[in-house]
Image (cartoon, rainbow, N blue to C red; front, side, top):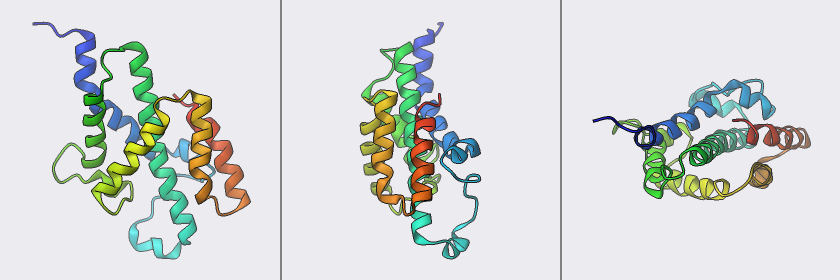
Length: 170
């Protein structure tokens, strides 16, 4: 029995959304758009040598890159296959983003959440914020969500400019 293209998309969509989100977190180019030299690569051991404000900004950017990529991918799939993007599919994708494909993946820790429930709450709220918005409104939402983490004018300018570029990236 042949599987239609739309049914194939429905089966693959949760993993594709999770992959897009995590791919954005690992993309040095997106980090550069936000004003970083590259994606932060030091381990938890060396975090004590970095200011708490800078760590909070990195954590925010890590999480928002995942959320924005997730929302952009879901919106683009919904345009092409409107019946595929359902609440159940998005819930499964969110579960993959939090827990990973295996029981011991714990991707919520990769996104620097201290608890699984914290990750679920933050991601649901973020995806719920971005998903219904146009690209221009996504930029505004990103900038508003970033405001508490921008501890210097230099970072404010970098992240505000980068939000325009990140939210327009397909």
